[in-house]
Length: 253
Image 1 (spheres, helix red, strand yellow):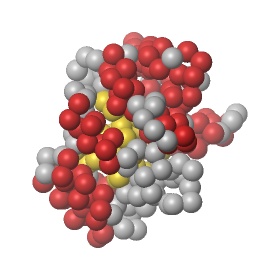
Image 2: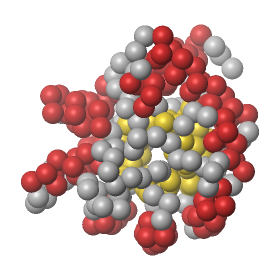
Image 3: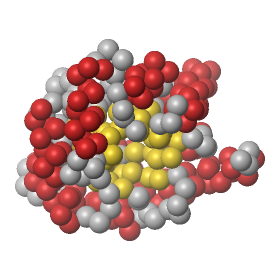
Image 4: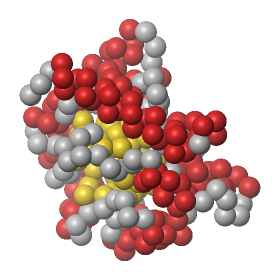
């Protein structure tokens, strides 16, 4: 576990379930992966219950809530079905994400500015139930302002474009994330980040002082094939902590 005020790591276990579901049965068990993540230094577990149940299942969510001590971040589409499930299980957090049936993974951020009236009551109901609500958005000031306007206390910045970019484009994408994180802090939003982060991309994002949590999954599960899940998470934890410590030392508050 990280110290209070340090950068948190949420481990997404969706793709442990993807591997299980490729063949059916019960192996590998995503709940076992969550336990290993805790041992390796994770601060929370993220699981996305998709409408088509392509990886995480309803039973997985039930077990995570009842068997895992770490906080659960329940990723969900903005639908009545998912709202009802969140209100029934009352996870620590619910992150509202865009969802398309044809996509392989979440391809972009939620369009908050264009759907404020639809999202506002959902954010309110989740918050009233004691669930920390976050919105998964692009590093776009307009979306940040909209998130603040509808009462979401947390945003998670989509880092996929940064991770996919090369050369000067990666620098430009990182600058967008830095500017968005600074704006989030300025308007009173807690800022998280995630999607596509790997060993070679996590450091620059971890160094951003106003980002307090990273959610990482696919890379960790893939790397686990070669080194084991605990080692994969431990290395990510180490890289995050080193980057944050260096940034703090170079730019003390």
